[in-house]
Figure 1 (cartoon, rainbow over the protein chains, first blue to last red):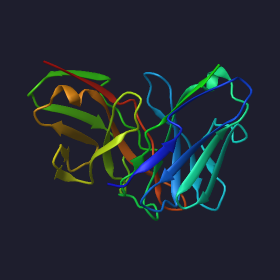
Figure 2 (spheres, rainbow over the protein chains, first blue to last red; figure 1 turned 180 degrees about the vertical axis):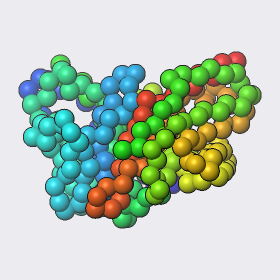
Figure 3 (cartoon, chains in turn cyan, yellow; figure 1 turned 120 degrees about the vertical axis):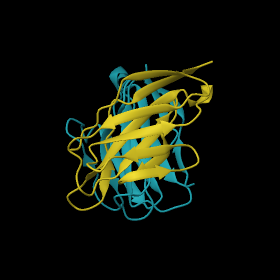
Figure 4 (cartoon, rainbow over the protein chains, first blue to last red; figure 1 turned 90 degrees about the horizontal axis):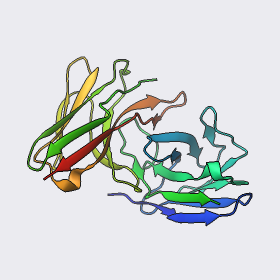
Length: 118
Length: 113
């Protein structure tokens, strides 16, 4: 099946610094990618929808200036956590669909990135 | 938005069949029902997807009644490695077309010897 790769798998950063997480679709083009955040023992929470060549669409309550999303190509979306604080520590997961987003298209998920802010 | 409701947890033993039911009372006409499996510290993995009636693949079956207000994921003869969280998702149609997936609470399945 299609592969979505995230990098890094884990990262530890100091409070106040910024961290960039990459999400790549390895063998297909993804017009749309999605970013999720997951806290321990909780479900995935959709943060934003990343659209190639246009601005991301953020879910209610998610700070767009805090979580910068760039979808510069059909195979790469990046999430930058700016001025990270300990409460931003979480598991971040991206997903992508092949080509144009259709109602019954399977979504492929990356392996996730564990962010720890100290 | 089509909200889903699942049991928080289920326990089973190796070799047994496990059925996890999900309620989605306000599912929209165009929504598909998709189930994902997630192991700790990993991204979700697609299991099965359906629109109505029954769908079967090499790992599971999905039963959807005519009113589509619920669905049941059936895992035949589970093993210890099936211990995971299972999510039922219903696609949410965006205004401009396409859809996004919203995760519910999921069901923690624990399989024992």
